[in-house]
Length: 306
Image 1: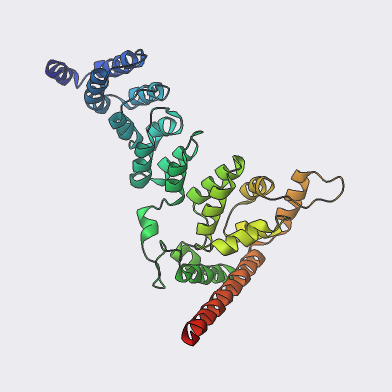
Image 2: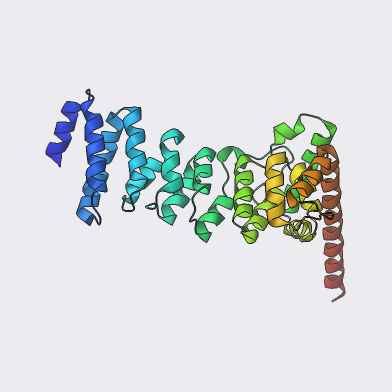
Protein backbone atom coordinates (compact mmCIF):
# COMPACT_ATOMS: atom_id res chain seq x y z
CA UNK A 1 0.00 0.00 0.00
CA UNK A 2 2.86 2.40 0.76
CA UNK A 3 4.34 1.71 -2.65
CA UNK A 4 0.96 2.44 -4.21
CA UNK A 5 0.81 5.86 -2.52
CA UNK A 6 4.32 6.67 -3.76
CA UNK A 7 3.20 5.74 -7.24
CA UNK A 8 0.21 8.07 -6.91
CA UNK A 9 2.44 10.91 -5.76
CA UNK A 10 4.37 10.60 -8.98
CA UNK A 11 1.16 10.83 -10.99
CA UNK A 12 -0.32 13.72 -9.04
CA UNK A 13 0.11 16.34 -11.77
CA UNK A 14 -1.06 14.20 -14.68
CA UNK A 15 -4.36 13.15 -16.15
CA UNK A 16 -3.36 9.58 -15.37
CA UNK A 17 -4.89 9.96 -11.93
CA UNK A 18 -8.33 10.17 -13.53
CA UNK A 19 -7.65 6.76 -15.02
CA UNK A 20 -6.41 5.47 -11.66
CA UNK A 21 -9.56 6.75 -9.92
CA UNK A 22 -11.88 5.09 -12.41
CA UNK A 23 -9.84 1.88 -12.36
CA UNK A 24 -9.95 1.85 -8.55
CA UNK A 25 -13.73 2.32 -8.54
CA UNK A 26 -14.25 -0.20 -11.33
CA UNK A 27 -12.09 -2.78 -9.61
CA UNK A 28 -13.91 -2.41 -6.31
CA UNK A 29 -17.28 -2.41 -8.05
CA UNK A 30 -16.52 -5.71 -9.71
CA UNK A 31 -16.30 -7.42 -6.31
CA UNK A 32 -19.62 -9.06 -5.44
CA UNK A 33 -18.77 -9.42 -1.77
CA UNK A 34 -15.52 -7.60 -0.92
CA UNK A 35 -13.68 -8.77 2.16
CA UNK A 36 -12.95 -6.52 5.13
CA UNK A 37 -9.36 -6.14 3.93
CA UNK A 38 -10.50 -5.18 0.42
CA UNK A 39 -12.90 -2.60 1.84
CA UNK A 40 -10.18 -1.18 4.04
CA UNK A 41 -7.74 -0.90 1.14
CA UNK A 42 -10.35 0.80 -1.00
CA UNK A 43 -11.18 3.28 1.78
CA UNK A 44 -7.48 4.12 2.21
CA UNK A 45 -6.93 4.63 -1.50
CA UNK A 46 -10.13 6.38 -2.58
CA UNK A 47 -9.71 9.76 -0.81
CA UNK A 48 -6.21 10.64 -2.03
CA UNK A 49 -6.96 9.58 -5.61
CA UNK A 50 -10.30 11.42 -5.58
CA UNK A 51 -8.71 14.64 -4.35
CA UNK A 52 -6.04 14.52 -7.06
CA UNK A 53 -8.49 13.83 -9.91
CA UNK A 54 -10.46 16.17 -12.16
CA UNK A 55 -14.04 17.26 -11.34
CA UNK A 56 -15.44 15.20 -14.21
CA UNK A 57 -13.65 12.06 -13.07
CA UNK A 58 -14.93 12.64 -9.54
CA UNK A 59 -18.53 12.86 -10.77
CA UNK A 60 -18.17 9.71 -12.84
CA UNK A 61 -16.56 7.81 -9.98
CA UNK A 62 -19.26 8.80 -7.50
CA UNK A 63 -22.03 8.00 -9.98
CA UNK A 64 -20.56 4.52 -10.41
CA UNK A 65 -20.30 3.97 -6.65
CA UNK A 66 -23.93 5.07 -6.20
CA UNK A 67 -25.03 1.64 -7.41
CA UNK A 68 -22.63 -0.40 -5.26
CA UNK A 69 -23.98 -1.91 -2.05
CA UNK A 70 -20.65 -2.51 -0.31
CA UNK A 71 -19.04 0.94 -0.22
CA UNK A 72 -17.31 1.36 3.19
CA UNK A 73 -19.01 3.78 5.57
CA UNK A 74 -15.89 5.97 5.76
CA UNK A 75 -16.14 6.43 1.99
CA UNK A 76 -19.90 7.02 2.24
CA UNK A 77 -19.33 9.82 4.76
CA UNK A 78 -16.54 11.24 2.63
CA UNK A 79 -18.57 11.29 -0.59
CA UNK A 80 -21.73 12.47 1.18
CA UNK A 81 -19.96 15.57 2.47
CA UNK A 82 -18.46 16.60 -0.87
CA UNK A 83 -19.94 19.45 -2.92
CA UNK A 84 -23.60 18.84 -3.70
CA UNK A 85 -23.08 18.60 -7.47
CA UNK A 86 -21.03 15.47 -6.83
CA UNK A 87 -22.71 14.12 -3.69
CA UNK A 88 -26.38 14.43 -4.71
CA UNK A 89 -26.81 11.20 -6.74
CA UNK A 90 -24.90 9.21 -4.12
CA UNK A 91 -26.98 10.59 -1.24
CA UNK A 92 -30.23 9.96 -3.11
CA UNK A 93 -29.53 6.47 -4.44
CA UNK A 94 -26.65 4.65 -2.77
CA UNK A 95 -27.79 1.42 -1.09
CA UNK A 96 -24.57 1.34 0.93
CA UNK A 97 -25.18 4.27 3.27
CA UNK A 98 -26.05 3.09 6.79
CA UNK A 99 -28.62 4.91 8.92
CA UNK A 100 -26.01 6.23 11.35
CA UNK A 101 -24.03 7.63 8.42
CA UNK A 102 -27.12 9.32 7.00
CA UNK A 103 -27.91 10.86 10.38
CA UNK A 104 -24.34 12.13 10.75
CA UNK A 105 -24.59 13.72 7.30
CA UNK A 106 -27.95 15.27 8.15
CA UNK A 107 -26.37 16.85 11.22
CA UNK A 108 -23.24 18.16 9.51
CA UNK A 109 -23.98 19.01 5.88
CA UNK A 110 -26.03 21.64 4.07
CA UNK A 111 -29.75 21.84 3.39
CA UNK A 112 -29.05 20.90 -0.24
CA UNK A 113 -27.44 17.67 0.95
CA UNK A 114 -30.43 16.98 3.20
CA UNK A 115 -32.87 17.52 0.33
CA UNK A 116 -30.96 14.90 -1.65
CA UNK A 117 -31.32 12.47 1.26
CA UNK A 118 -35.06 13.15 1.37
CA UNK A 119 -35.33 11.67 -2.13
CA UNK A 120 -34.09 8.26 -0.97
CA UNK A 121 -36.83 5.63 -1.36
CA UNK A 122 -35.95 3.59 1.73
CA UNK A 123 -35.58 5.90 4.70
CA UNK A 124 -35.94 4.29 8.12
CA UNK A 125 -38.02 5.84 10.89
CA UNK A 126 -34.98 7.04 12.83
CA UNK A 127 -33.56 8.76 9.74
CA UNK A 128 -36.93 10.39 9.06
CA UNK A 129 -37.02 11.64 12.65
CA UNK A 130 -33.54 13.10 12.15
CA UNK A 131 -34.76 14.83 9.00
CA UNK A 132 -37.81 16.25 10.75
CA UNK A 133 -35.63 17.61 13.54
CA UNK A 134 -32.86 18.90 11.29
CA UNK A 135 -31.93 22.55 11.59
CA UNK A 136 -29.07 24.39 10.00
CA UNK A 137 -26.87 26.51 12.24
CA UNK A 138 -28.40 29.75 10.98
CA UNK A 139 -31.84 28.46 11.98
CA UNK A 140 -30.63 27.84 15.53
CA UNK A 141 -29.77 31.50 16.09
CA UNK A 142 -32.24 33.10 18.42
CA UNK A 143 -34.32 35.78 16.66
CA UNK A 144 -35.65 38.93 18.27
CA UNK A 145 -38.17 38.18 20.98
CA UNK A 146 -36.14 36.01 23.37
CA UNK A 147 -37.52 32.61 22.55
CA UNK A 148 -35.93 29.24 21.88
CA UNK A 149 -37.01 27.93 18.50
CA UNK A 150 -35.89 24.39 19.44
CA UNK A 151 -38.22 23.93 22.42
CA UNK A 152 -41.67 23.96 20.79
CA UNK A 153 -42.99 26.00 23.72
CA UNK A 154 -45.60 28.77 23.74
CA UNK A 155 -42.89 31.38 23.19
CA UNK A 156 -42.13 29.74 19.84
CA UNK A 157 -45.77 30.03 18.80
CA UNK A 158 -45.84 33.62 20.00
CA UNK A 159 -42.90 34.45 17.74
CA UNK A 160 -44.71 32.82 14.83
CA UNK A 161 -47.79 34.92 15.52
CA UNK A 162 -45.73 38.11 15.57
CA UNK A 163 -44.11 37.18 12.29
CA UNK A 164 -47.40 36.33 10.61
CA UNK A 165 -48.74 39.71 11.70
CA UNK A 166 -45.70 41.32 10.11
CA UNK A 167 -46.34 39.40 6.90
CA UNK A 168 -49.97 40.51 6.85
CA UNK A 169 -48.87 44.12 7.41
CA UNK A 170 -46.35 43.88 4.59
CA UNK A 171 -43.35 44.76 6.75
CA UNK A 172 -39.86 43.33 6.49
CA UNK A 173 -39.99 41.66 9.90
CA UNK A 174 -40.92 38.31 8.40
CA UNK A 175 -37.68 38.13 6.49
CA UNK A 176 -35.68 39.20 9.54
CA UNK A 177 -37.17 36.65 11.91
CA UNK A 178 -37.13 33.80 9.42
CA UNK A 179 -39.47 31.51 11.37
CA UNK A 180 -42.85 32.23 9.85
CA UNK A 181 -42.56 30.41 6.55
CA UNK A 182 -41.82 26.82 5.68
CA UNK A 183 -38.17 26.22 4.91
CA UNK A 184 -37.29 24.41 1.69
CA UNK A 185 -36.41 21.41 3.84
CA UNK A 186 -39.79 21.39 5.60
CA UNK A 187 -41.57 21.76 2.25
CA UNK A 188 -39.61 18.86 0.77
CA UNK A 189 -40.47 16.70 3.79
CA UNK A 190 -44.16 17.54 3.66
CA UNK A 191 -44.30 16.74 -0.06
CA UNK A 192 -42.47 13.45 0.51
CA UNK A 193 -44.70 12.38 3.40
CA UNK A 194 -47.82 13.30 1.43
CA UNK A 195 -46.63 11.36 -1.61
CA UNK A 196 -45.86 8.27 0.47
CA UNK A 197 -48.97 8.59 2.66
CA UNK A 198 -46.80 8.80 5.80
CA UNK A 199 -49.33 10.76 7.81
CA UNK A 200 -47.66 10.56 11.26
CA UNK A 201 -44.46 12.05 9.86
CA UNK A 202 -46.46 14.67 7.95
CA UNK A 203 -48.23 15.61 11.17
CA UNK A 204 -44.97 15.91 13.10
CA UNK A 205 -43.36 18.12 10.45
CA UNK A 206 -46.51 20.23 10.11
CA UNK A 207 -46.70 20.72 13.89
CA UNK A 208 -43.10 21.90 13.99
CA UNK A 209 -43.87 24.40 11.25
CA UNK A 210 -46.67 25.71 13.48
CA UNK A 211 -44.26 26.37 16.32
CA UNK A 212 -44.60 22.94 17.91
CA UNK A 213 -48.37 23.18 18.51
CA UNK A 214 -49.44 19.56 17.96
CA UNK A 215 -53.00 20.22 19.12
CA UNK A 216 -53.53 22.88 16.48
CA UNK A 217 -51.86 20.71 13.86
CA UNK A 218 -54.22 17.81 14.62
CA UNK A 219 -57.28 20.07 14.51
CA UNK A 220 -56.30 21.42 11.13
CA UNK A 221 -55.61 17.96 9.74
CA UNK A 222 -58.82 16.47 11.17
CA UNK A 223 -61.01 18.99 9.31
CA UNK A 224 -62.40 16.69 6.58
CA UNK A 225 -62.62 18.99 3.55
CA UNK A 226 -59.00 20.16 3.46
CA UNK A 227 -60.01 23.81 3.74
CA UNK A 228 -58.13 24.47 6.98
CA UNK A 229 -55.03 22.63 5.79
CA UNK A 230 -55.00 24.69 2.60
CA UNK A 231 -55.31 27.90 4.64
CA UNK A 232 -52.47 26.89 6.96
CA UNK A 233 -50.09 25.80 4.18
CA UNK A 234 -50.65 29.02 2.24
CA UNK A 235 -50.23 31.09 5.42
CA UNK A 236 -46.92 29.33 6.05
CA UNK A 237 -45.72 30.18 2.55
CA UNK A 238 -46.13 26.94 0.59
CA UNK A 239 -46.45 27.68 -3.11
CA UNK A 240 -49.51 26.92 -5.23
CA UNK A 241 -48.09 23.82 -6.93
CA UNK A 242 -46.90 22.13 -3.73
CA UNK A 243 -50.12 22.97 -1.88
CA UNK A 244 -52.18 21.52 -4.74
CA UNK A 245 -50.04 18.38 -4.66
CA UNK A 246 -50.18 17.86 -0.90
CA UNK A 247 -53.88 18.56 -0.26
CA UNK A 248 -55.59 15.60 -2.00
CA UNK A 249 -53.02 13.19 -0.56
CA UNK A 250 -53.68 14.26 3.03
CA UNK A 251 -57.30 15.47 3.07
CA UNK A 252 -60.57 14.32 1.51
CA UNK A 253 -61.27 17.32 -0.71
CA UNK A 254 -64.86 18.52 -0.81
CA UNK A 255 -66.15 18.23 -4.41
CA UNK A 256 -69.30 19.22 -6.22
CA UNK A 257 -71.06 16.73 -8.49
CA UNK A 258 -68.99 15.84 -11.57
CA UNK A 259 -65.98 17.78 -10.32
CA UNK A 260 -62.65 15.99 -10.46
CA UNK A 261 -60.43 16.08 -7.40
CA UNK A 262 -57.83 18.02 -9.36
CA UNK A 263 -60.38 20.67 -10.35
CA UNK A 264 -61.70 20.95 -6.79
CA UNK A 265 -58.18 21.37 -5.40
CA UNK A 266 -57.29 24.04 -7.95
CA UNK A 267 -60.54 25.87 -7.19
CA UNK A 268 -59.88 25.76 -3.45
CA UNK A 269 -56.24 26.82 -3.59
CA UNK A 270 -56.93 29.50 -6.19
CA UNK A 271 -59.65 31.04 -4.03
CA UNK A 272 -57.38 31.61 -1.03
CA UNK A 273 -55.44 34.84 -0.56
CA UNK A 274 -52.20 34.74 1.48
CA UNK A 275 -53.03 37.76 3.63
CA UNK A 276 -56.43 36.35 4.59
CA UNK A 277 -54.89 32.94 5.29
CA UNK A 278 -52.33 34.54 7.57
CA UNK A 279 -55.03 36.33 9.54
CA UNK A 280 -57.05 33.13 9.85
CA UNK A 281 -54.05 31.18 11.13
CA UNK A 282 -53.33 33.97 13.60
CA UNK A 283 -56.90 33.63 14.86
CA UNK A 284 -56.49 29.89 15.40
CA UNK A 285 -53.26 30.43 17.27
CA UNK A 286 -54.78 33.15 19.43
CA UNK A 287 -57.61 30.79 20.35
CA UNK A 288 -55.09 28.07 21.23
CA UNK A 289 -53.22 30.51 23.44
CA UNK A 290 -56.45 31.36 25.25
CA UNK A 291 -57.23 27.66 25.75
CA UNK A 292 -53.76 27.02 27.12
CA UNK A 293 -54.02 29.94 29.51
CA UNK A 294 -57.47 28.91 30.78
CA UNK A 295 -56.32 25.31 31.28
CA UNK A 296 -53.27 26.50 33.21
CA UNK A 297 -55.42 28.74 35.41
CA UNK A 298 -57.81 25.87 36.18
CA UNK A 299 -54.94 23.58 37.02
CA UNK A 300 -53.43 26.16 39.33
CA UNK A 301 -56.78 26.76 41.03
CA UNK A 302 -57.26 23.02 41.56
CA UNK A 303 -53.75 22.76 43.00
CA UNK A 304 -54.40 25.56 45.47
CA UNK A 305 -57.73 24.13 46.62
CA UNK A 306 -56.31 20.64 47.12
